[in-house]
Image 1 (tube, rainbow, N blue to C red):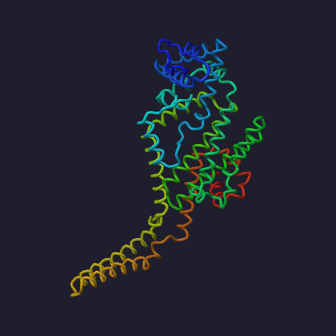
Image 2: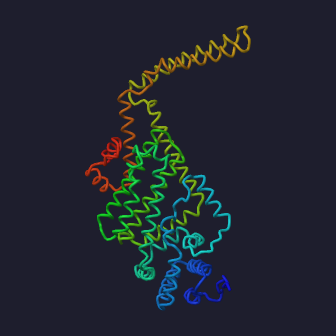
Image 3: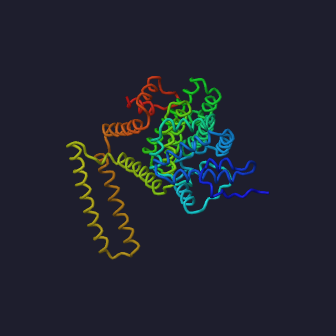
Length: 429
């Protein structure tokens, strides 16, 4: 006989409710307990919420049976999914991700299994909740660390999931076209899974851990250079979204590595996860951030492509003025011939042909006659390359720590990176 999936509403204390949970096939009740406990915590102001969190941890640790029951629920809840997916897009394109978020907001979600990710998503977390998490004391954090002790494997699983997804995007056909590598085997994304496996197998050895971090760093460099190459070749909204997604996945891997080896404050990590859930529920934030990123790429690409129309000296002003006067004269004769052809006693077909030839020849004459005056000189081309390198330097300056960049450059760029990659990186010193 199946157990009733309703939690008893007369038990306001989650510790008592946890102690009364039936054993066996009761994942629906465990999921309900997880959701009700989160609602119980959020149902009071932040000051009282801290007291409730502390009393909940103490109550669970007081009895060994209750503590073991909580650990069973925690294992079933698959926390690795939270670490690997919170705040990151599920789809690899903006329209699909937008439709997915709209569906989750409007349609009811049915979850039969114990899922911490679904419970946190349904908890309607906000940025204020993230501020509350980061304001917790170390005593409150230590109490919960004891309860979920031994969950280091959750971080390792999350890192592996992120590596699989990042490598799939980085080695996809569309992204490889703008990567600074000729073949997939030369890409650091091809080596990412091997580095993750070695780091997980030899977790206590610092050299494998550092090798993984170096591989992640090279992946971020490749993705950043792909942004620069995309600005030179043309902007694609799909590629912008996928590159931003893979950069976010790589950054999440680095954060998980720091938390896993006690190099990051768990309160900051918890606040980041809560803030990610708050942002994930917002469709407006997704559209705003994605559109802003794509608009910046388009503006940058357009500005670089049309930089030869900008006069920077007196001689360039004279050339542009001379070209404008010549183009104006050709336009005047074009208009004159237009009226001449319109006044001729010709069939409509031949009048149309005459007008077409008139405009075609005038524009072709403008293009070839004034090409030398409006095209970029060698010096202008050099300025354009320097501007593109400065834009690359600006991207790397915001993304990669300066000390890390200098260390990597001093060791020498790998042979798989082309000359433009080396030039961009050396400009960052």
